[in-house]
Amino acid sequence: MSLIKRLWNDEAGFVVSAELILIATIAVLGLIVALDTVRNAITSELSDVAGAIQDVNQSYTWSGVVGHSATVAGSSYADDTDFCDGEEDPENADDNCIAHPSAGGAITAEEDGTGVAAGNGATGNTP
Image (cartoon, rainbow, N blue to C red; front, side):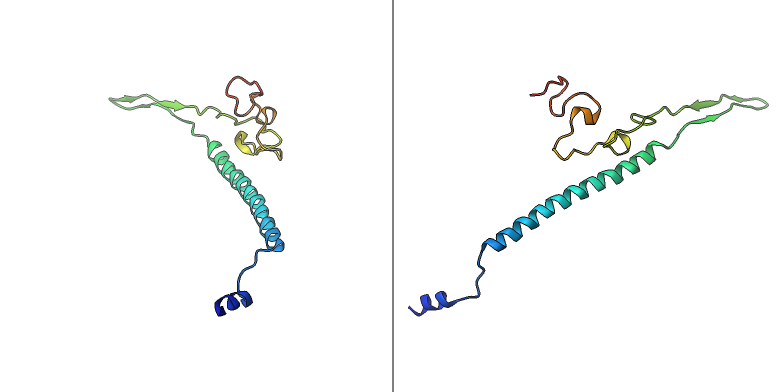
């Protein structure tokens, strides 16, 4: 009987109350929003790095050499414009045609510029 009385009078336990549930819920929602912001910031920075690497021009040209008893032909290479390089990026996009999802969720066909709705393959039909 003394064990039950000690357990009844024990106040050292953790009580799950409505306040604690509310605080935990707000903390989890805050973490979700923070992780979404971190994801967008990392994507933006990596896109900037990719754009800087993409803008490096690797073209070269060297002329042939003519010597007393030998001749070497010249060579050249022209670096073409890469995909999504040299054109303006959409309003809701980072460099290199990378678009963040809008507040509503998935990227729409108008946002990604392809005209094909996300997740519908090449058909372009919306469900």
